[in-house]
Image 1 (cartoon, rainbow, N blue to C red):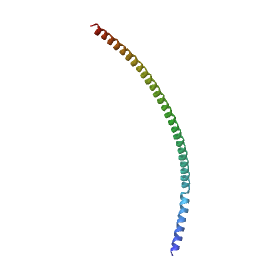
Image 2: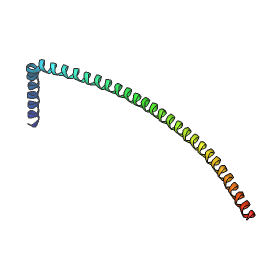
Image 3: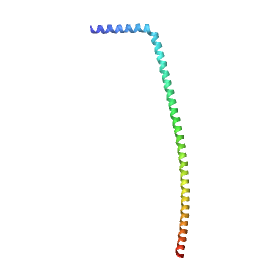
Image 4: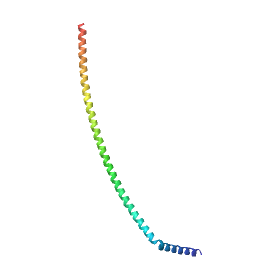
Length: 118
């Protein structure tokens, strides 16, 4: 008896599917074609997006490398300028120090002459 019910239900389902195909067949085919087109468009859009994203990544990396190079060059110039200024200041300090020593020596010599004379 259970087998008859199952066979009966299977037959009814087959009939319902047949009726649905007769009534909705054209619309279902249109929907399937439409979904297929949408899937193709989505795949093409995804591929285009991936391509553009890769290009953007490469462009960003290139810009970053250029910025890094420019910053490094600027730091190198600044470092060179600072080293040159330090060299000039050291030379000037040495010159002032020699002049001060010479002046101090002269003052001490003058003072000693005054002390000897007195």
